[in-house]
Length: 298
Length: 298
Image (tube, rainbow over all chains, first blue to last red; front, side):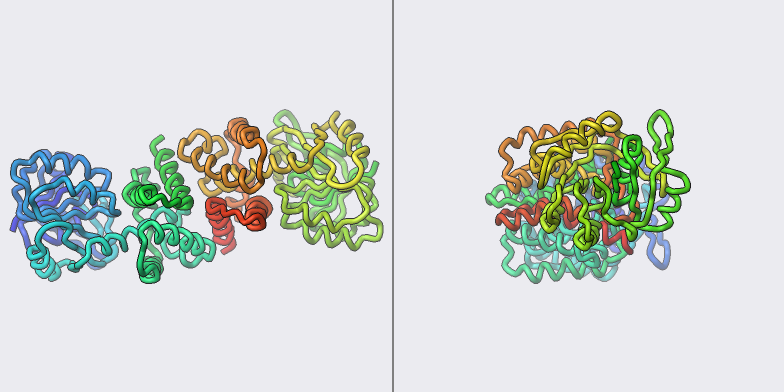
C-alpha cells in the first residue's frame, strides 16, 4: 500500500520510519532541502537501544498529487489551514485521511472535506526531531485512532496491521478520545511552559497541584464532562508517568517556536465563549503563553 | 533626636544612612555579626554619583530597649509578627512608631499596639543591599507617610525636617496611600516574577497588558475602588518609569528567598474571601508564586 505522510516534523518522521517497514511510504516536506536530505540519508530513527535507517521517498509538498491510498497529515494545527486548502483543490481527493493534530480546533476544518474517509488520531509518543532527517523516539506509547467521518473497516484493518511494528489502538469514540488528550494537554503544556518545569513537578508541588485542580474545574464545565474523575485521574497519571519529560509546549517556548496554544487553550476558550461560560484562569494561562510566544519573536 | 531603625535590610540601611545626617541613629540588626560589621565600617551608601559612609550605632535586636524617640520598623512583612510580639512585651512602649512594610496585611497587627503614635509609610525608593553594611540607592523616589493612629503633629514636623536630606511626603489618608502601593505591587511583582521580565515588558507586550487589565478588574472589585482609572493610570506610569527595573519579587524568586506574596496577594485574597468575592486570576497568580517559592526551598 502507498502511504503519504504530509509533514516531516518529529511525528511525521516517526510515523514514516515505522510505517516504511510495512508500506511504501512517501514523505511530503515543506522544503526541497529537507526532501533532498531524506532522499540522501533515509530517516534515521534513534531508540533507547539502537539507530535504524528507514528508506522512504521524500518530495516537497508542492509535488503532492493525493494519489496515496492512505494519507497521514502530521503538521501542527496552525499549519493545517493551508494543507486543507490544498486538499480541497486536489482533483483526486485521497480516499483515507488520518489527522494527527493536538487539540480539537482542527475538527471544524475537516467538515469542509468531502467524499472521503476521515480519521483522527491522538499520538502518545514522545519524539524529538534532531535534524532534518533524524528523529529520536523518547517515550514509546500508542497512537489512538478513531473514525471522524466515513467507514471504519479500513481503519480497523490498518490498526491491526500497523500494531505489529508500531502500537496503534482503535477507539470507538473520536470525541472522548480527543477530549482526553485535549484536557491533558491543556493542563500540562501551558503550566510547564510558564513555570519551565518537567511534568512531574505539577503534581509534586502542592501549589501547582492546586492550580491544576482549579483549571480542571473550568475545563470540566466547558466540556460538560459526565465523569470528570476519570479524566482527572488520567491527567495525574500522565504527570506521574512522564515526570521527567519536558512538555512539547515548554520545548517550543524554549526554542522560540510557535506553540500549539491556539489549538489547545484557544479551542477551549472558543467553546467557553460559545456556551457563555467564563473561564478566567484559562484566559490568564492563554495570555501568559501568547505573551511568551511574542517575546520569543523579538 | 534618637532614632531607632529595626531591620538592616536594604530599606533599613538606606534610611539609617540618610537619617544619620540629621539624627542620632541606632540600627537594630538580626545578627551580632551584622551589628559588628556596621560598627566597624559604618553604613556605606552608594549613589549613582558617589559613595558616602554614615556613622551609626548598631546593636542586635535582642538589646533593643524601645527608648528612642522615633522607631522605624523596616523588616519584611513576614518578619513583623515577632517584632510586634517584642514591642508588646517592652515596658517602655516607644512613643512614635513608623512601619514601612509593603502591602496592607500588617495593619491588623498594629491594632494590638496600645498608647502610642503609629505611622505607616510606603517607600518608593529602589535599594539593594550589597553586603551586611553596604546599600546601593538605585532609584530615588520618595517615602509617603501617614498617620495610622494617634497625633499628626510629630509626623508633619518629621516630614519637614527629613525632606531636606531624603524626600518624604506627608499624606492625609493612610488607606488610599497604602492601597495605591498595594495595587501596583500586586500587579507588577507577581507577574514579573513568574515571567522573569523587567517591569516595562508588562506594558509593552499586548498579551501581558491584557492580563494586567484583567487582574486590575479583580483587584478593583475587591477594594471597591471609587476612581479605578486613577489607580490604573498610576500602575501603567510605574511600569513605564521603572521599565528597566527588576521587581523585588523577581529578585527574591531568583535568589530563592521568601517573597512578600502573602502581604500583597494574600491580603487581597483574604479581603476577597471576607467580602464573598471570587478572584480566580489572583488565586492562580498566588499559587504560581507560592509554588515557585517552595521550588526554591528544595
